[in-house]
Image 1 (cartoon, rainbow, N blue to C red):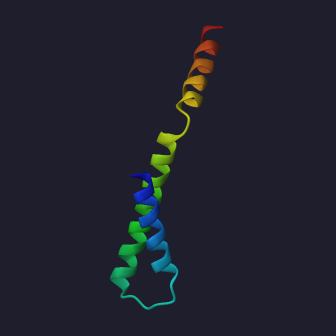
Image 2 (cartoon, rainbow, N blue to C red):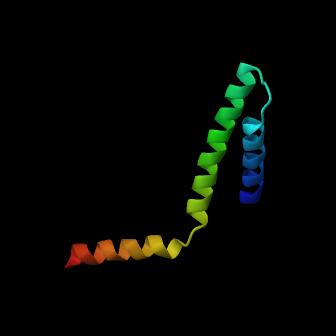
Image 3 (cartoon, rainbow, N blue to C red):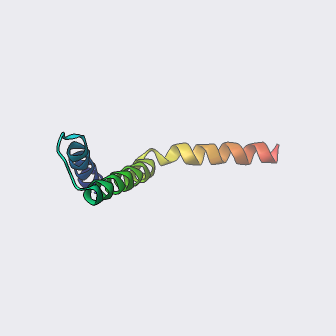
Length: 67
């Protein structure tokens, strides 16, 4: 799914950067789609990163509270 989101995001960015005239509503819609895909990509990349880092931070916080 991450690959699909990345490809669609790249396609939207190409359309936004292309020197073509688009109607105002279409341009605004593409901007919102680009922002939404960026947020979705950020969420997916956070989820797929190493989960051991988040548990290691949790263990550190727990050990500090016990001391």
